[in-house]
Amino acid sequence: MKDKQIGELIQAEEERQVGMINLIASENYVSDDVLEALGSKLTNKYAEGYPGARYYGGNNVIDQVERECQKRALELFIRQPADRVNWAVNVQPLSGSPANVAVYLALVPSNGKIMGMTLAHGGHLTHGHKVSITGKMWQQVPFGVDPKTELINYEEIKQLALKEKPNIIVAGFTAYPRVIEWQKFRDIADACGAYLMVDISHVAGLVAGGAYPSPFPYADVVTTTTHKTLRGPRSALIFSRKINARPTNLKTTVNEVNGFSAGQPRLISELIDKAVFPGMQGGPHLNQIAAVAVALGEAATPEFADYTRQVVQNAQALAGELSRLGWRLVSGGTDSHLLLVDTWLNGKGLSGGEASDRLEKAGIIVNKNAIPGDTRPPIDPSGIRLGTAAETTRGKKERDMVEIAGRINKILRE
Image (cartoon, rainbow, N blue to C red; front, side, top):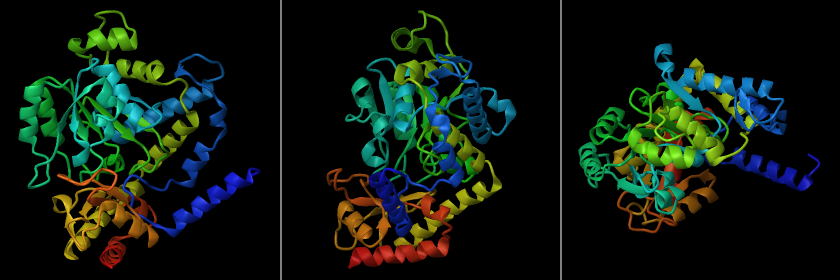
């Protein structure tokens, strides 16, 4: 690289990544093929619009790239062709947060209600939190976990949904270690007349590999990032059923956001496409979409399915050993790639920030994280979140996780 300063910084970051044990649950390592697509000359092309309906010339090849990415996404996550024809996918969102916002723009009236897991209990900012645009344009109806079990209480959520009548229910998380029962969320959405949106950003790769239950038989919309367990570039996908949007939501969203004529029935997928472009963004990043397509192709292999099973086995091995060593885990363990450790209760009463700093100095990267019922501030909460996707990509197995747990225990108890 001619730019020596940036080249040296890139080299320094590469060396940092090689030299650390990475237990950040939202990170992974992409293949050389994904990097090659991401750095390709597709970067040079402007492609505002959708395949077959661009606003610029010269997009014949670009249309093929985007269509192939759509095809691979549908084939990976919806295995039965008979079911696949009932779904559409938008591959243009630049990342997960704008993907979620686009869904709300399409389906939730201004100041309507988004029912989602509270940030403090494992939800995401874009599930309606007040500091996010999703909590400023819409009202959040927050739900959490049971204070005793630290598990989702579906009956309590149902009663809340019947009381609040949200326009959309978001099932998904960034820091909930257990399997979500998608059927129960479907039943709740049906009971209160809400759309069911599932955000699988953290477990998308596990779903694709069969290591975590699929929400597709139950959801109206599924959103996901592509850079966590799916092991792709930073991007996002929006899957939606090909069903008509409900008339109660059309007055605001169709007329004011998407520009369709009054009373004209539209598919959810059409509304979402309009919300992404021109509602949210201009030209898509085709180099990014091509890299997603490569990652989706990799995720369709038997080797990737084996990888996802190993991710979960590694997380459970890490959780089991930390628990044996006396650390309290939120909900008692994990069913996925991530786990939450209560560092404040155990050991010397370390805050999440202190624990994270100690571990980083010793060569282990984690992230500080709030735990349910946390009384400490979000900037320095009571726990840390650990994930096994990245280190599993590097080839680690259960015995390695037991060793890492021992190192974590020694570092934090010194």
